[in-house]
Length: 204
Ligand code: MN
Image (cartoon, rainbow, N blue to C red; front, side):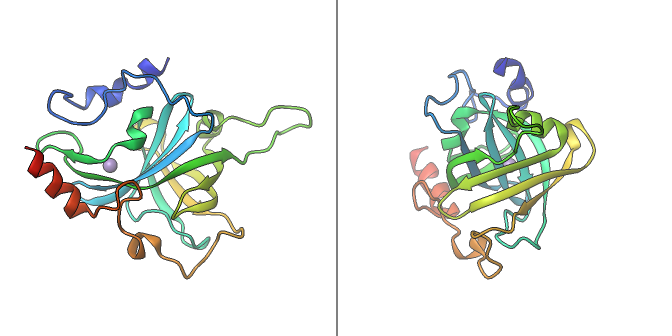
C-alpha cells in the first residue's frame, strides 16, 4: 500500500543522481510515531512539515515555517507523501533534480494524535482519516517545536491543497519565541545550511 502512495514521490526523482531515500525500506520500527520539520533551501527557502501516517510521511511545505504564536497562522501547501526513512534525511539534492538544494533536519521528535472519538466508546479518527477530512490535531514533542498544532485545509484537493498550520493555545504556546530565526541549525548534526553544503562538496 505504501508502495502506491510513494508513486508520485518516486516519479519526481532520479535516485541514481539524488542522495534522497527511495523508500524501498519499510517504515520505522520504533513504537512512537514521528514528525520532522526539514528546512529546505530550494528555489526558495521553506520548511517541510512531515507526519508519520500509515507507514509514510504525509507532507506539507510551509513557506515561513511553524510559529509558536497561536495568532500566527502559517500557510502549508500539501505535497506528496515521502518514505519513512526521509525522516532522517539531511544533505544536498543535486542541481537539475526535483527539489534541488540543501535539506536540514531542523526539528524532529515523536508526536501523538490529539483527535477525540466522535462518539463515546468509538476509536478516535486516525491521522490519515483527519487528513482526508481536512482537519488534523497533533501534539508534537520536538526540541524546538512542541505542544498542540492544528492543520486545517482551506482550499483545493489533491496536489494543490492549501492548509494552515496553527499553534494551539496551550502551555507550549509562546508569542515571544521565534525559533525559525533564533534556532536556525540542524537538530540532528548542529550544522548550518552552509556547513551541510560544504561537507557535501568535500565528499565529491
Ligand atoms: Mn521542500
